Image (cartoon, rainbow, N blue to C red; front, side, top):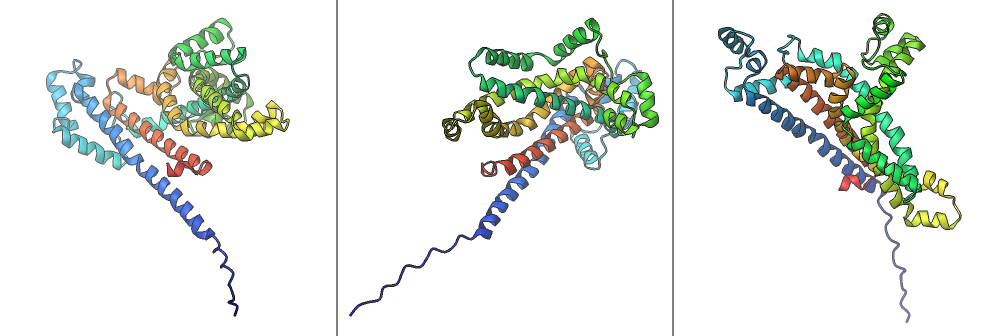
Length: 364
């Protein structure tokens, strides 16, 4: 008597929708954690700045001490509420931030929110220009250095990268002004635009505060050229600082990628080196660039203080230096709080892009 044997049951098909749900859940959890981290980051920085500013006393005494009689100074301190306990002032400051009230400047009696909206566009414009310079200069030169590894051009480019990010931004600005403005006379020395150009922008521009957009909206090509001419030197001074970082990073990652197995396989099939760089090694080498852009934004914003002061580019960095000289701590606190929010949001956006490009990031 023979016993019928049954074939083993085929394996159950993978649950594709469940897999997609798990991946989506992992990405959602990752982004939620990164979004929640913005709150303590901004809170810690704002708190640190508040108490550091109070180490020299209340803002009014720091700003006006020695310029007002003692009785008038004491009256001003009492009216502003700076005679209250420090903890009460701190809680009141946090409450104002939550309501969008950054206070009023002491030196020129302007709402800090007005200062932020008036000068923030100039800093944003300079930051965009600088990052564009960093990407345009750093990435191609990093590719060239990787392709010509350990040759003379590679050594020159490595020295150039070190020179870029080791040179103080104010010294680079002064050197660029000396060469291109004083000696050659090609570019303006300082400012964002000439007085005549400013009048034309006020009449026909869109009023965004970003001069390039305003010039384009005016339909005046000469005005666009003038805005770009004024932006060249400060953008180079600040952008080359970050370009050196990008150059070294792209070079290092492309050297690693060019030595990987799939690139060696393509090379054995007779693929040219230039095609290997463009098609196989270029994109993987850019992933680390995306992950460090958030840090570079912080570097650009910190460098904007010296760059704007050197070139009299009237943005938040320039105003911050002026308020520091005037010991206007209320204005300083407001500007630093805004910069902290910008850096935190930029890092969040970078984390989102990195997680979408490289799924390994969201599980790290």
